Image 1 (cartoon, rainbow, N blue to C red):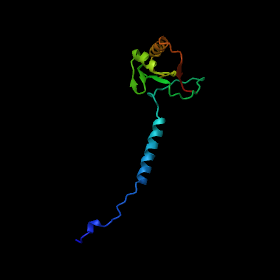
Image 2 (spheres, helix red, strand yellow):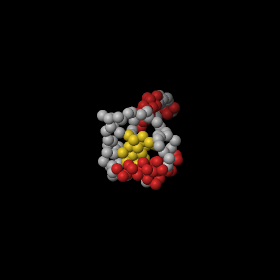
Image 3 (cartoon, rainbow, N blue to C red):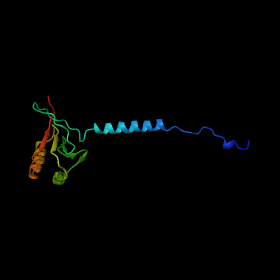
Image 4 (cartoon, one colour):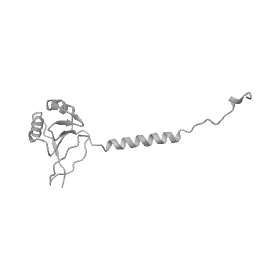
Length: 129
């Protein structure tokens, strides 16, 4: 081997620009994908002829009652007794999504607890025709 062989410059520079571009594109993809995801448990909403679209409100507390009559906040099940604590943390209105197969007494029970907590700003979600 020649002396100074390892001292030669082999052009070991690495351009990181394409890597950074890919990382930013992935970051943008995941940010946009997360904003379009549904914030609650998917429920089969009933149809209503007078249903109107309301603007999105990030301060709104979104609750759902599934077909089994269980109350959810997002994907997590919530006990009805915990509603006063949830309402204390929420400043905006309450959006209630009730599955069309849910027992009516579950809906009435949640509405009763909301009214007992002094909340009259409840939006009941339905689909339009």
